[in-house]
Image (cartoon, rainbow, N blue to C red; front, side):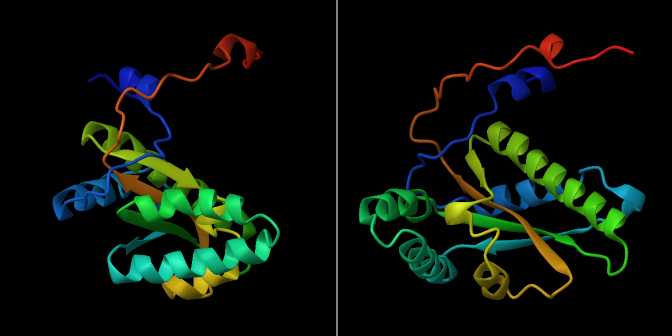
Length: 186
């Protein structure tokens, strides 16, 4: 499949089957991620693969977080938790923070985001669905995730990626603004 076609068909897949993702496919996702562009070839990413018993601990952590955040909305808590409990594989992606070098640290965040996008395109090629979470259930902005994965202080969580086999492979395309509406020629 062409790159353009793959980009056109890329979707956030939230509904996945309770089927484990094979190790070979996990390695393929991670290998593709490391091919992402990155400033000065710093390779500033770290990947934390969560499944099995670790995923059960993450589910408990996420439940506590959601109950604190939405104490009067138990239905919202349960709906938010569904994507996690139904997904067999979670990958947390961090970027290196370079003390005293804010610009390079920001570049590293962009590189980690590119790594996630590389995983996303590879997931589609492998017949997997993927959704990248930066808020809510992804716990990206909550210190508990940082502690849970055991990341050192010089790592910033960039995204939590939920991966599995899609329940419905015909997720409809979302309308996009044409590039001509978003481009200024100088």
